[in-house]
Every structure is written in C-alpha cells, then in structure tokens.
Length: 104
Image (cartoon, rainbow, N blue to C red):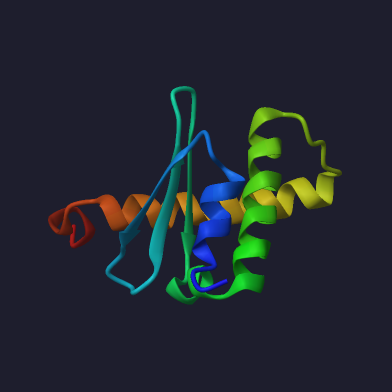
C-alpha cells in the first residue's frame, strides 16, 4: 500500500483521527468520537511503515479495551502498563503546557 496510514483510518472508522507535531519531533495521535478520546505519542516513521501501523492499531485496540475495562490484567502487567500510561500522560501534559510553566 502506498500510504500505510490508511490502515489506521480503516481500523477506526467511527473516530476522527488527528496528528499533532510535538517539540521533541514525535507526534501526538488522537482518536476522538462523540463518547471518548484516546491519545498516544508515536514516532513519525510509524505512520509510513505498514508493519508499524499494524502494531500501532493492535496497541490502540488493547489500550481502548483496558480503558473500557473489557480487558483484565494481572497485577504485574497492570503495574507496568499503568506506569507507561502515567509516563505518556505526563509527557502529553508537558507538551501542552505553556513554556513559562515548565521553567518554574
């Protein structure tokens, strides 16, 4: 496929998908519909590689199931994923915070 990112749009047809550049050269991927919003920080190369787009789709589906409570985790997995989610959320907040907040 010429544009592998099309797989992402096909996998989530009920979501509006946006890409926002971040100062650290990564990209904030946001999936939004009337009920929920999911965000994930990704590397730009991911949307141009078919295998990486497939992996991204699987990760997003897993993250959505975890968020909706339809996927249970054992304690070790839950702690690992919670830590990763907290790190991603913190990075997202820092990227969206005005510059003067970061220097305080």
